[in-house]
Length: 144
Image 1 (cartoon, rainbow, N blue to C red):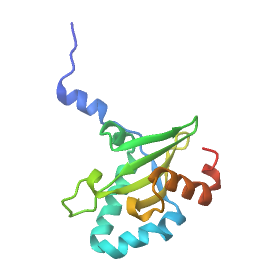
Image 2: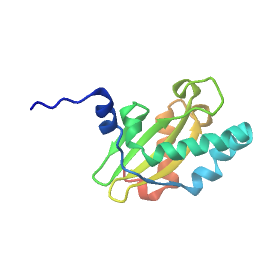
Image 3: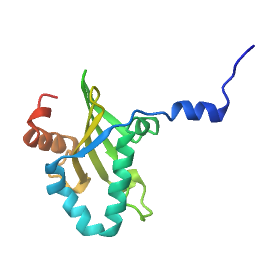
């Protein structure tokens, strides 16, 4: 008897993901998140819920090419993701909105380190700017 996978069965297999606990770090909350909350009001509450749910199953973001691995060590993966504001017509990528997250593989936890718009960061190089922010504000990730 030969077994074959149907498209729907294959999708179900691929869509299984580990459930992660999601923690928004206080630095992220105190800085750029306040700006998003003020600018987008009620839409930000919905957006934050969506982001949180996506990070609970962060593995799926890699299947959709929505997350980019920056550093992958034995225990922690540092990634950049994109998001859109709920109710807007601008795509994730086109919005310029980003999150920097640390995925703790052994404890199934996602720590949200930064939530920002690419124009919020100083300098000509976005990657250098957010890496400096992480290095300066999160000593536990400065070794990565």
